[in-house]
Amino acid sequence: RGAVNGYGPGGTNTYIDEGTATGSGYGGRGGAVSPQYESRLGGPTYGSVSAPADPGSGGANSAFNFGGGAVSIVAGGAVRVDGTITADGVFKSEHGAGAGSGGSVFITCATFSGTGLVSADGGESSRRNLTGGGGGGRVAVVYTDEAAQSASVGVRFTLAGGLGSVFDYYPDPFAGYGDLGTLYLSGHKFLPA
Image 1 (cartoon, rainbow, N blue to C red):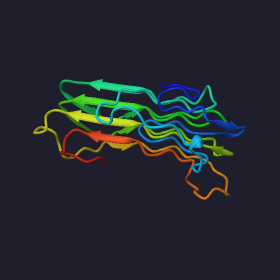
Image 2 (cartoon, one colour):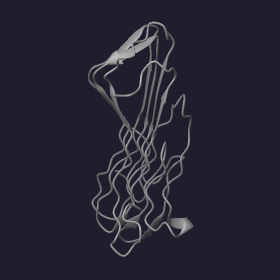
Image 3 (cartoon, one colour):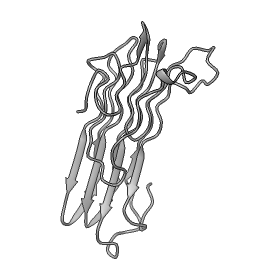
Image 4 (cartoon, one colour):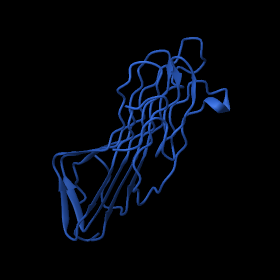
């Protein structure tokens, strides 16, 4: 698992007042709670798009809102994903805390296939007061045998930013949402399902 309590490169210790905290970033920026103020923006992006190796960063004002972990799979042959690989950010606190960002999944192999799910979503906020969702993480699949790689891959990828919460009087109802993370595929043989 990743960091907690605003720690990590995309972490933010922006605990503004009781019930108000920003989300952490990684592949996508963390959710802001008052986007008109620079000091209240969510955590920044960081790390490599094509070779992600970092865990997610922790949500502000919480010892429980972990960033997602860092998953690395290195294979000389084929990798098939029919189950679920998860590096999601976590939100466990109820009140006044930002969510952790998604982590990373980095797969290197000769060919890639399957019908499963690879997920590095940002954590959702409490949906109470003004709290930011975590930014999505980073996923990369690097396959080396372009000729043997199938164009039909059923694996789904999700790198959603976590839901945030803002009051009605803020002009942007999506201000608290974390941004999407990044997906990198080394070749041009297949597109995500």
